[in-house]
Length: 116
Image 1 (cartoon, rainbow, N blue to C red):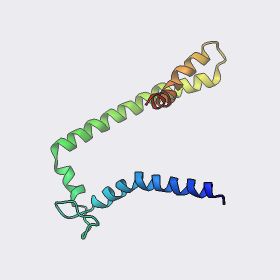
Image 2 (cartoon, one colour):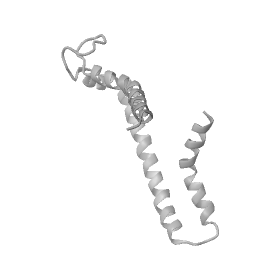
Image 3 (cartoon, helix red, strand yellow):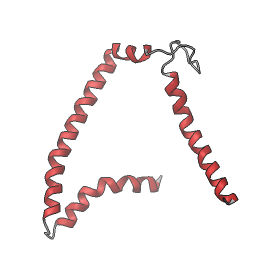
């Protein structure tokens, strides 16, 4: 392997460790029994996972989020399935315009990232 290829692989691995390392530490810390951050945890527990459901504010927010996501998924299915079926079967002039309209949410995030 060329030296430049090895440097590239090592650089990519270091970037991945830099990005994923904090997530791994937070993930392990979530199972900590202690009141304070202690890494690595001395005792593993699900204490904090059970405590979160004791919070009325969290449960209310979770229910609202679940309701909105179910309504959004249902709406997407009710609009998307017939639209996909129609667009795959027709050869009308307006087909490309409607297809572009439905594909625009896929394209927009790439454009936004390009400006960032």
